[in-house]
Image (cartoon, rainbow, N blue to C red; front, side):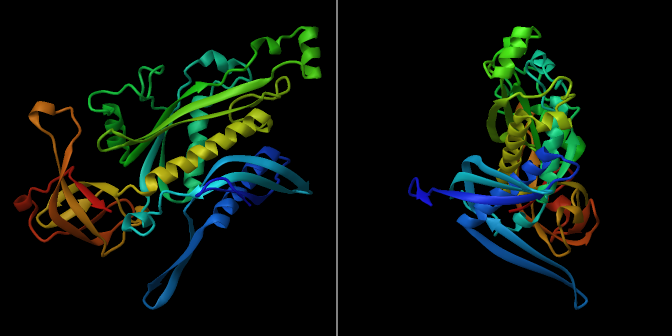
Amino acid sequence: MLVVSAQAVVLEGVGHASIYNEDLASARAEARNAAMRDLALQYESQVSTRDTMENGVLTESRMRLVSSAKARNVKIIDEHRTGDMLRVTVRGDISAGQGSCSGGEAGRLKKRVAVTGFPLLYPDQARVGRIDDAGEILPQRLQQGLRESGDLQVFSATSSRLFSDLLNAPTVQQGSNRLTNVIQVAREMGVQFVVTGVIRDVGVADPAAWGSSVLDKMQRGMGASDMRRRFAVDMVVLDGFSGSPVYQQRFEAAADWNAGPGSSTGFGSAGFRKTHYGEAVAGAISDMTQAVTEALACQPFMTRITRVDGQRVTLASGATAGLRPGDELHLYRSARYFDSLGGTPELSDSQMKVTLNNVHPDFSNGLMPQVGGQVNIQRDDIAIIW
């Protein structure tokens, strides 16, 4: 262990994965993720357990490892295959995270997230390897990673495109740093957050290296050609109630494009995943998945009020989000003003709580102390757990 700063250390982690149908790329990505977890758990972790009892009978028992470590500059330093088992060793700079939010009530709930399409800024770059489907396959792989994390409810909107100006997206926004179409997408899909972005670069370093002449083929065979390919994507996570960004970052990678003729037939093909470039892209997508999970971990859980009938309040979230009878949510009024109808709605604390007594998979309801009309709580207001 080498100390690189007062807070960071260099550690090595080991991960294992089984190889199915000779799909080495998928096994490598799985082993890398396992090694990353090993890194984090070595640095600092805590174990928590939760048991659920019904009528005196244990119906559920969960154990959860929560690590406050963050990894940077992670590289694969060793790879060894034994039969159908792959072992990967990684090395990275590990430091303390920005704090854990698992202690709050919102930490046990699954926030709803929609992932939209990631359009290509320069579609012509995708001709090499025929990866023009990257704008749909990348968010699909991101969705898969978020679902596997088990911390979020993930919805697909890969056919949606939020940006009209790809060159400046997602920095150019309307009004007060927001996107009105994000609010519309979030409302239609019933989600709290929207993840979107733009694929800025999938170009090869030297287009001439892919010529079909005998000389070009000889240079490639001798390693005299620059076969590197770039990958750069801007990702932004937006709040679905206001349209404001809560997280934004560019992810980049580069590796050799060593696909044989006709072996790559798309961004999600097995031939693509087996290239060095495909492996580098898989690592970047894994980093994107982790970034989304971390960015939303400390956000409160918010859901819309769909009905108010006297003291009874109905919410747009239920058991699939983790809500249970007896949960208490703070009620906030959502208001717009005539001089800024297109602006971000302002939330004001009503000083009221709703206590849930009836929870269904996708909705729930409960009672608040006063009649809704007396405290001006109505449909489209917000219920929050911090």
